[in-house]
Length: 281
Image (cartoon, rainbow, N blue to C red):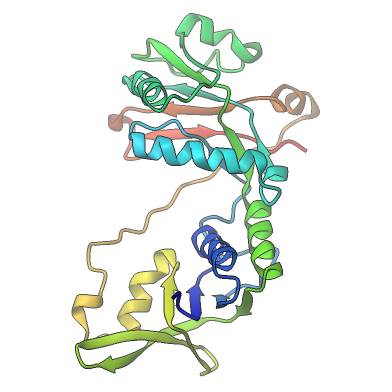
């Protein structure tokens, strides 16, 4: 017997997708999605709110590869996400054996895709020589996977939230200030949240999808309950983003470009890879 009510805090990609999957599986349940921003806000405080995100199954870890392949199939077929997915391919430059490991994972899973390792000299001439001037130091082969691509992130996220709302999820735009707990015989249990205006919302199950806000939320909710605190279990990180204006000529050249990924050795900086992909209008 499933719980009768769910409260999900945070409507980024984890919160929105959790709400959608729950309402699909338990259509009679009461499901509430709470976020500080309105569901149709032009901007949002969420890591998943961006111009675009890489959609791929190219991983060293075969578990990630399997999950990536399953996700890509949904991107290709589900009307919620299909309009925002672009299978442009990926051009992956790495001085390690990353490409070989990716190929092995696909072979083990029996996945048939248009993917190969390409010698550097040949790779330089692909896509009209777009990557001819890239840094190929220590690189023997480039991974070309035409089944990878990218998605319009904010549009896909909005579509996910709207689909959940259409199926019956209640959306509340409000700031959560703390969690509410009830005392049980064997301990304490989270039973809801308190909003900035003082209103308390309760549910059978409370799901936190609060990203970098999680440590502060837990600390503020129960400062004396130290084993609930995050400590070093969660580390907030960020990705820098650069924007450059393009002329009409360059827009034409880049309109059909693949996602470009260059794995930089760690001695060149703490971030191990750089990525390049474009929205072309």
